[in-house]
Length: 496
Ligand SMILES: Cc1cc2nc3c(=O)[nH]c(=O)nc-3n(C[C@H](O)[C@H](O)[C@H](O)COP(=O)(O)OP(=O)(O)OC[C@H]3O[C@@H](n4cnc5c(N)ncnc54)[C@H](O)[C@@H]3O)c2cc1C
Image (tube, rainbow, N blue to C red; front, side, top):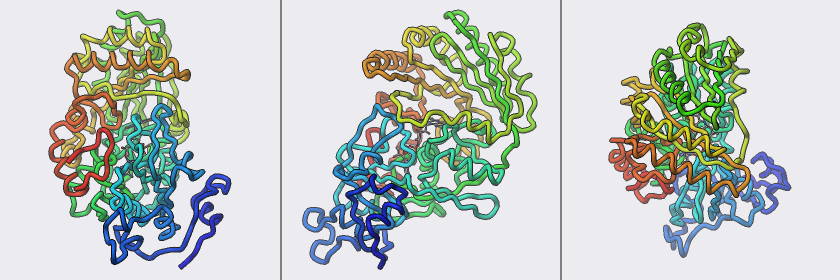
């Protein structure tokens, strides 16, 4: 049994002493089972949370290299309680800072024993703060960052890895996973809700590259997904904090193209007519894109930016977007850049920042938003801080094998829209959020109901169908199998 001093333990967790002065660290335990029984299951009070319950010190004592339980009075609590979105403020009763799968098992057992509503946090980028809660337990796996190569360029990744860390590791081997572009987004939340980015029209969503996973489920048991096809299916698009804590992902990887090309088109001082013309042209042009190509249509005030990208030896992008470049005010080309370097340009801000972002519908084509396009434009122009964006999906995302292997339900919809609001002065928030909601209502009234789970909006009324389509009932059944007491919950979690 190894006993850790406070200083040793803080070092293990990668933190300065000044950061966590009140955390006690104690002896080790060899208990490798799912439940915390080794912690607290004394013979007299095997399960009763009231009479025989574990205290935060008990759980930390039992496996100090695996988990520490922070309470609000611990100095480190605040730093692990931050989220990328500064708007969403939660105060969990406990944060279980896990270093290993065993630590996660113990944290889940503790939550079960104490009957604590439990959330899971990896990269902390949930738009609506679904990786935390008020008064419950948050299982924080942000420190679990191992990346291990296995045969055939497969890679196992722990859930605390951020996209920039994964890119660094994979690009060094000239491989990649199709994922998002923001460097500080967590691979865990991204994959479990779908995940898309520059490479998705060629290689599918991030979840489509997922081959296997390990999860500590709400029933307290640890599962590997082999032979559990339905569990894997459910975690590919519906796995965010619904069934348990994923402690390891196994991905196939793709060869990394050496180069990346981006072409940025700007349209300034738009009026409604001009906006409408360019938008309709964008919808006419984007079906011509190759699977390697991607485009984003970003309206910020009366300035429109259209980003078009491609990579590798695909030289047709310029020809594919000719109709758009012909009408743009300016065209800025960065041809055949070194790909790893080029990716860093999209890493974005580190946060926390004040914002509200949400899915603003998945579309089939221009026809879906034609009738409301100018109203959206007027609202964005009138409300500084609002951004309306549409990204291309489609391509191989709409592949039948991928469709059957995952619960992501919107493959036939090749456009994903995202509404964004940013402010620095809290006094701006109410007006922006009102305008934001107004656009969301316009979109709903236009009959657009499909939404992306990784871009949640707390105000979606029929979120079950919006995120999961026809699969929601099956996901509920799977929830019942793996989390029968609904331990894992948040405002839009799958219910029993
Ligand atoms: C700046 C920014 C850029 C983004 N860019 C993209 C993009 O390019 N493409 C894209 O597809 N999405 C993008 N997103 C959305 C992103 O995919 C989601 O916010 C994602 O859920 C974040 O995952 P996370 O691990 O960082 O967040 P967290 O807040 O830690 O978790 C998000 C959700 O996943 C659950 N979860 C986290 N870890 C686990 C786990 N180990 N086991 C089970 N459940 C878990 C949480 O409970 C929560 O419900 C972006 C978001 C932001 C804020």
